[in-house]
Length: 189
Length: 375
Image 1 (cartoon, chains in turn yellow, blue):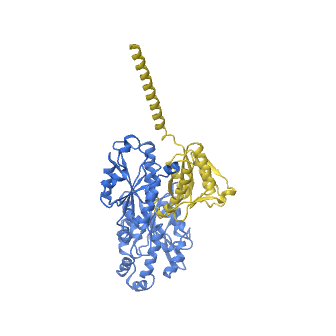
Image 2: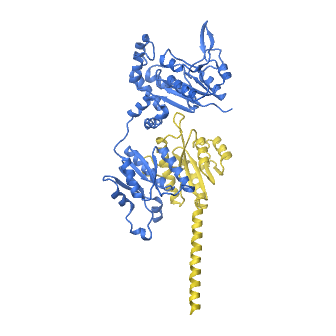
Image 3: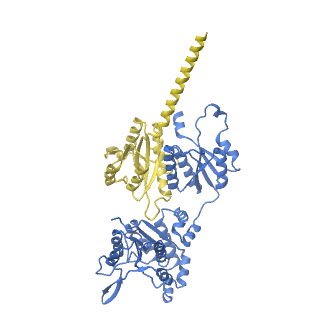
């Protein structure tokens, strides 16, 4: 009789121990998650972003379970303090970020957006690089320079970014852009 | 060598107090123990300006002869050789007399900055190249001495010295700008109220991105510091009546809520506060710290205010903030699906409605992820 009780206690103890161990491991994994920086930066300017660049960033983010960080780069004139509110720029940035988030969410990619200020686009990028950690930067090269990020800026980015930089060469699909509808209520792709 | 710090005092017209303010700040720097010299000053026989310059070391000027007339100019080599910490150089748009190293004073200033000397300087808005035509159109007066906009762009700081047209005209009538015999001519020509109003608008536009800049000047009042600046803010239209409060958490998902809240605030023409009720005693670190920084940055970009309240009762903390800030709308994110005993708890919006003063609306912002997932 006592043997049955001992076996029962041992069985219960084993099960409880196993449960506690697996729970602590699960917690350990959860607590590790925030520290493991796994982000893909997609800097952009103006009121549209290259669809090729966004799709590439989303593909990478999905494949690597990474977070997409679309970053709107805003130029603050020298006549204003760098840290001032920029409502006009924000008005341009918000629908774009919304459009990108919509597309990313549809593909199951988490988004952590930013609006970064600088005296120039490069300065904004520099501030962003200082503040955030990335694994990758995806940026479209535009033959026309219409994106606002110039060839010189890209060279600078390659030299300075402490992450892998993916520069998408200009392609035939570059006319396809992600943009926000003018009214801002709904966003289109 | 590190380039000197460049600060420009920008005004809409002569007499607004640019030089006076530059000297005032120069004196403050000297009082703080810095080596300050007056590189060049155009006192325009204004007593207040001359008084303000007293006590500052003045660099001797160089003499240049134009058609047998002696003209005094800033002595750039002497200033570079004296090498002070800070040089005050008035009227950066000035054209130098022929025979000097540079044609324009702003080019002299570039050399001074290049030598690692900090510079305070002054300019009127109509001297900016890109605005020259516009100002000429507005006022009927075209200035010949222009400077490229890049000069203003290269400044580390630009301080707008603002004054209402009425106040400027009062100063002119009191003889504080030009001597008595020139006052009537000035009033009939350049110093007309419509001219000054247009110039004021131009200079305000120059230093601000949009109408919101007036509020910005208010918030920067300390830095700008003149009573006239305060007057600008008092004139600025400011929406009252509605105030929006968005409850956020240091999570990326809160950004959508902030975007929505800001858009609503824009439509209502009202201020936006963001509130995070933080559990007491818990340090902000790691990912949470990063997200708080991101929220702070976003709030700053939008002109919103991020409030962090430490409280163990979310509803009580929100109710207190709503009373203190006079919020009329509360925006909350959609709650995560509840589990276990949490299902028995009254939903947050209802609890907020009960705890806050009557008339405060609560709006729930849907979480895009939930919808997509459900669909």
